[in-house]
Length: 417
Ligand SMILES: Cc1ncc(COP(=O)(O)O)c(C=O)c1O
Ligand SMILES: N[C@@H](CCCC[NH3+])C(=O)O
Image 1 (spheres, protein in one colour):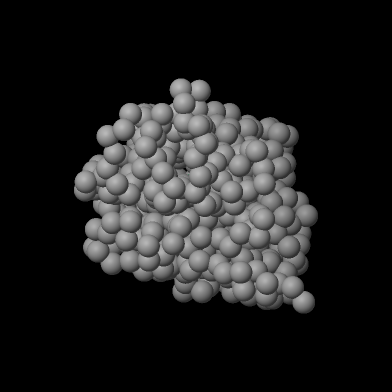
Image 2: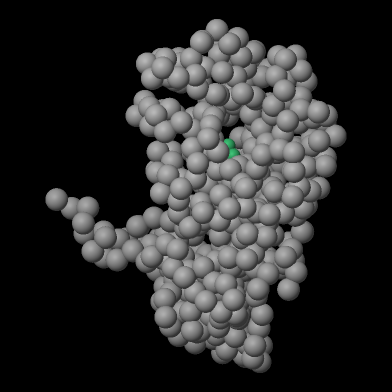
C-alpha cells in the first residue's frame, strides 16, 4: 500500500481482516482491548524521514502537540528531527524521552513564569516569543539565570490559510503572535535586541493546520522573507500545517518536498525550519473500536454505537472533521448501508463518522477501524464521563509494543483526595 494512502504503509487485508505491522487487528483488539490506537512505527518514521530529507540544510521540529510520548521522542531524536513543545507537560515528555534540550523549541501564547523558568534552566534551544509581556518576563528570567536565551519572534503575517477557522492562526485577528501589519513584530525585534539576556535567533510564523493548498505557505514565506530582510534576520521558521487525507476519496495532500520547494523559492538563502505535526503522526495510526449496539441501518441511516467516542476523538464534534470507518474484523458481502458511527457519551453530538457505509450484516462484537487517527486524537483525548483514555500500541514487523498504556479507573480515582 502506498505511503500516500489513507491507511498506514504496512496495512494489508487478508480475508476481510485488516493487518497492521504484520498483525491482525482482531488479535490486537483481543490482546489490548478497544478502543485503541494502533501506530504503524515504520510509517511514522518514514514520514518523519521524508520531512528530514526534504530540508537537508534546515531544521525539522516535529509539532509534539499532534501526538507525543517518550518513545516517539526517541524515534525523532535518532532520525535527526528536533521537537516543538508548547506546554510544561510536553516539555516534560521531551525530557523523559531524552531529547537534547538544545533541539527543543518552546511555543505557546501564554507560557507561565514557571514554564519559562524550567525552559531556561533546562537550556531549551529556542523560546518562541508570543507577546510583549512574555518578552520582558523571559528577559528577566534569563538575566536572573545568568544566560543569554535564544528566541524567535512569532509573527502573524496576515495570511488566509484556507482551513477551518478554529485551526487558522495566521490571519490578522489571532490570539497568536505579533502583528506584522500593526508594527508589533518590528517593535518586538527592537526590544529583543535591546535586552542583553535575549538573542534573536530568527522569526517564526505558523498560518494554521490541515492546509492542503500551498499558496498560503508561499504567501507567508514571501511576507516573512521581506520582513526578515528588512530586519536583517537570516533564519525563518515557517511552522507546521500541512494537511492529510482522512477518507479514501479525499484529495492527496502535497508532499513535504513540494511544500519546501514552493517555500524556498520565496526564502532564497535564508536558513529555514519547519514544524510538521499532523502530516507525520496523522496517517500512521488507526483507531480500533468494537461495535456495541446497532439501531436501524436503512437508506436514511441508522446508528452504530462503539466503545469510544468524543473522548478519544473530539475532532468531528469540534471541527466537523470528516472520517471514514470500515469493518476490519471479518469479510462481509452484505450490501452496504448508511450509518452514523457514534460513541458512548451522554451527548447527541458524540459522533465519530457522520456518513459511514458499512455492511448491512454488521453486528455487535465487530471491530471497526478508523484510519488517519494519529494526530490530535490521543493528544486531545479526555476523560469525559470518567472514561479511561485508550492506549497507543506501536506495531512493527509482527511485534506490538505499548507506547502509551491504557488508563485505568484506578488512574482516575487517584486524583481524588
Ligand atoms: C506553532 C505550531 N507549530 C506547529 C504546529 C503543527 O501543526 P500541524 O500539526 O498542522 O503540522 C502547530 C499546530 O498547528 C503550531 O501551532
Ligand atoms: N487540534 C486541531 C489542530 C490544532 C493545531 C495546533 N495549533 C485539529 O485537531 O485539527
